[in-house]
Image (cartoon, rainbow, N blue to C red; front, side, top):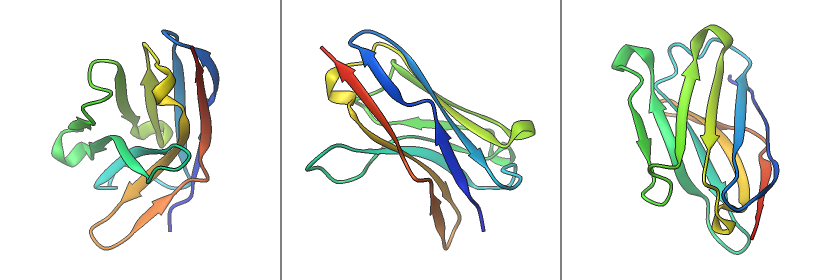
Length: 118
């Protein structure tokens, strides 16, 4: 079982930055993939970015809508995954969820609200 706790959401102006953190209850070194998803009102949950484990080279993957603006990283020593969000746009407004994905199961955090004003 993995417990995930997000922090770092809040209000930002368009063009601004926020950094989200996701602290895991256990060691994340071996979790195959960790990522960030978001859900805006009236929309389904969508992948923002994910990153593979250190065993497979910490390879990041991004949604086209955030490429070049967001950066995902994982600090295995701190059991934490980060999402650095720059050049924020109003359409980035959503609840952001941390995710830990195994081959046959996955875990979610409780979500953190990100609101970007124009």
